[in-house]
Image (cartoon, rainbow, N blue to C red; front, top):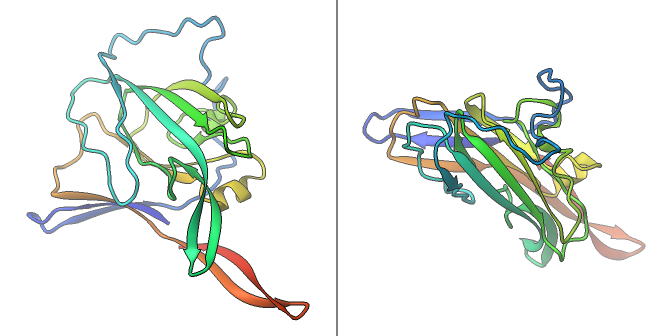
Length: 230
């Protein structure tokens, strides 16, 4: 389970928003993937969108600062996929596939109405192609088709953040379970137009369990990895 915890010391009220990691089999109906930019290279102009900014991304437990502007903006999001080796337990290392170099992936924060320009870079030292399915994107695929990226390459797509809420994102490259199981998931928060109630602290908390146990194969010790989530 992945969750965003917003804790207020003054009010003594804690707001907890949680989403379960799941691969959606369907999307809201749409004629085409909203994330696909026009083929002629000319992008539609939204008169409500003013200004351009680059999104601040954070790794758990940190959360990007609240959005204080009152108007939607063009927000540029840059995420790099890294396949990195990290310590799993004493004497055990594991190759994680990550959005941003850690598990869970980078926390993304935008505002309702923002025009998001998403850049996905697949590091040249990676061995696998990857993409990203953002459940905050209205339309089939969540950008997955537009962002399929080979190692050493980058992809770009755009979408408008239509619906406020806390959404999961994940790699949707087949086999999806392998990519998600190796660490390719995270959260994107679409703040409502009116903003969120002020709090003292915000946390990005992801609970993931990786089990490993020693087994015997042909008289020699070995390690068997089992994965689970909570």
